[in-house]
Image (tube, rainbow, N blue to C red):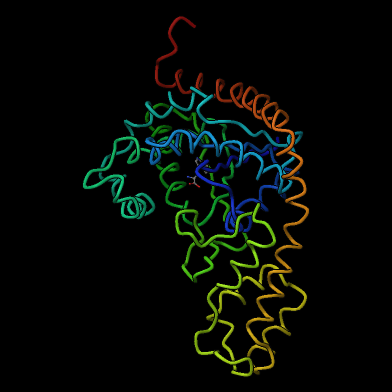
Length: 332
Ligand code: TRP
């Protein structure tokens, strides 16, 4: 039997090259081999955007188009909308008995996010936000996922899911599948400012849909070795974000770039120009495909509608098993 992959994105903005190298390229590769489900996590997005429903609504389509543009094939993979799968909400309620508040409060990702969202949560976090790892366990188990391709920051979520699965199976009998995380080849992608994470809210991202002008502008401002001031100063590629991105986009020429920077034969302006060109070239086919879907939003709707129907069918079966285990299978 084919193994199953489930992964998802919060529709809070367009996807960027951090997503591309952290997770999207893996998805495209694995759709050939695995039963693949890609969830647009609108319910999860609302946990920290409950006061901005229009933003979430608008970005559902953007995220769907980003996935299609990088090469997710709707004939092979199932793209669906989380809020249209009530089974996930039901599972979340059942799992919530298997997780303690203090365990959720200790979750490193949740902790960090609460810290970043001080503005929203002031001195007290919502029930919904604190519980989103439980709902994510429901997302994953509702499809009997074997593998979950995610960015490194999501590892605590998969640990939490495993914990719930083990507890569930121990109490209610062997019912749920235990998933494994699959972190992308590049792990976490740094931001343009050198920050350890490229993020929508950090204002340091290159989006898949960025125009050539925007890309050139952003790369022009990217952080380089602060001690390399003149063209012929010897540079240190290890502290340069431009070199860091060259590693992703300039494969064949990498050794030259490194040597020329270190020996002072290469200036940062030229180096940035080359990087911009390579990124623009890399994104060109992706953007072409994206434009096609932008011009045909009815096609994207149709893909989401069909995907959601298929996802619902699968999650219905899992929920039935869960209810049986929990002695909630009345009248059947
Ligand atoms: N939490 C993930 C993120 O912020 C999105 C997500 C929601 C997800 N449900 C998921 C990822 C299930 C993998 C599996 O990126």
